[in-house]
Length: 296
Image 1 (tube, helix red, strand yellow):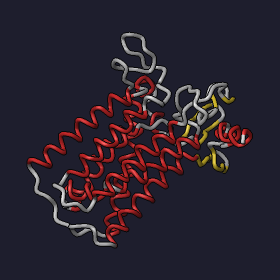
Image 2 (cartoon, helix red, strand yellow):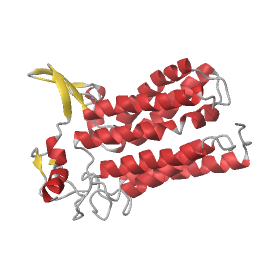
Image 3 (cartoon, helix red, strand yellow):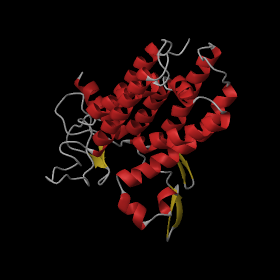
Image 4 (cartoon, helix red, strand yellow):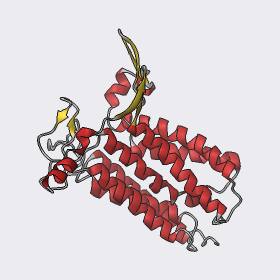
């Protein structure tokens, strides 16, 4: 039993963030997580179309079109959001390198992928790209967004699993037995203290948990916009809680010099999640007072 627990706690040490490499190209678990996220979300949406859960005309081809727009929006928004929210100095000093999937030095070029992504930036990019898609197709924005929403957190679960396999976004130091020894990115050796597997917490709370809520109520006769607002509230609240277990960003300090925080006890992620909850609450209020229940 002790050997099994030891194996579990040291699991991050046995997993390489690189799945395979060909020359300078590397496929990382995080990149694969992004790909699987879109595939799973798309398949769930198409399943709903096949089972005629949509109350407006939309086809599988429309879903593929949405893939193109939203994938581009998520990648660009996620990267730009990370630079603005978390690493603005890099954006100021190296604006051209900020969006390149490779680095160039005296030894040539090395494919690195686009590292450093922000969920909240990706969400903004998704909404902008989705709006462009909706305008092009002449659909109702919130009707289609409500229809897509239940699929998104299930797909997002695989993104957090990709974070775990990549050994990034690990949690704070803990003494609980289910903690893990993650690799220190500065020394490439395991930390000597257990840490919360916060990526798995987030996969469970923000992914599976939010999916369960939205999937349960997806076919209720709810006012248009309700599922979109509910997603923002549920994800924002879940992520806010999960941030207490996640290792904060050391380069943030509030005026009281509390490491990792930007406003009182809150991290940047928690501040952005608070904005999400407020926006979601406003959409729910608007849906209830202005919109009519959708027919199913």
